[in-house]
Image (cartoon, rainbow, N blue to C red; front, side, top):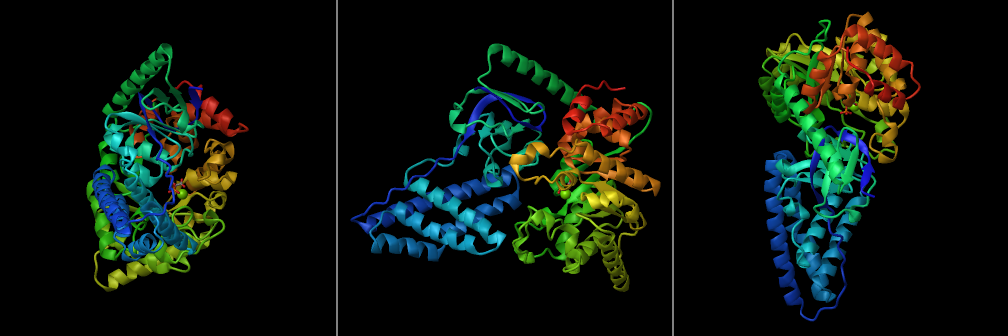
Length: 571
Ligand code: PEP
Ligand code: MG
């Protein structure tokens, strides 16, 4: 088999050699040794080599991804220098006369096992880091070269079973033509990385990595979800044509991206971006975003050991506002829980974290966290077009409580004579079906609603968004999800409030007529999607879009809706 149908994860066509990322599986032989001193010296030189590799990877990660993500390599260095671990390894070599490989494996496994036993996600993640370090050390002992990432010296399509965040930080982004993985869903780390890099990607393509030849020419269509390893001349020509057409289209989209996106009949919805920090904000501005519709602030809290001070938060928010130069900024308050755990918030292991202590639900036990975040935002937001929204809202009480906290902060700042942002809009994310069904009841407390289709899809269709076995079911095009979207927009408009969408559906050009027809006021997406969505908006008239929305809502399933939208001619 050379042709694999997977799931589309990031649009565009890539052609290039396959670069196989398939980390070597380590095999450790247990041997008795006669000269422990020589074995120890051998181990120490492997530790040195490993240390150099980790330092180099940390540097590369800083350039490729950012200082924040590079921090994991500092933790790796600490393990290599850990006195307790090394004393135990030495004892195994000298007292049990075992070879260095066996000693490293026994001791690192034991430490990792102990860490993994503690019911704490942060420490469990450290256990994975420990495993990573032990594999590196074993590879160094066995004379294997550094990770295969060293070989990514020329532009290639990355082919892997799956990619973890620590795999991806090592790649030189400029060399990635496309990504194809056997596993993972459209909202997996791989897909998000590909979209943020703006390279085509296919996930869940169900191939066996061992069957793919290194360097084989690969044609990948990220819009169709199709990958061909070793295409025929005809297939290659076809892929080249598609690629040329896609590149031309992309050039046109980017060339007009700083113009407003107005429909044929004069409607101009806002097209804004989803960001995780100041770098994304810059990229969003370059690509024509008219502001930010979702700033995911939880990224500021992950990978930390304690809560951010108000002053540090204020300066980060200010940094983003400076880039935006007065354009709208929607900041989402901390959305932890689900698949994002913040270790220092004493989060306990939960059976169903997506249904547990997540997002705004923490306001009851930890109002102080929200309090500090509001304070930092109000201090930073003087002169900015600041909009604050709450994640994971499922009931009116949560919003009332959050507003009380906001009022407390305002009063306290006044008392202390601090200048604060005056005109701040307040909104909620609609990502739990109850919030959509009860949208009318939230109106007295909010200025706007922003629909999070990623979670709304998982909660309305009962599909875990991180589980690739059900990834194919998790379609926001399902009319059940669309009906909740329609209900929210209708309710909001009845009360004179505006509605945005910041789930992945808003960045999907094929969904544009549907969402315009439903009356969406603001589209928020990965910065790389802004040019194509703006171009799509310009091709439609609102009247035609209303018909499209009516037809789509009456369909029985997502495949019918997707097929229908694909077959439409803009008008
Ligand atoms: C969503 O759920 O659609 C959303 C935008 O939030 P996140 O993906 O961060 O959960
Ligand atoms: Mg969400």
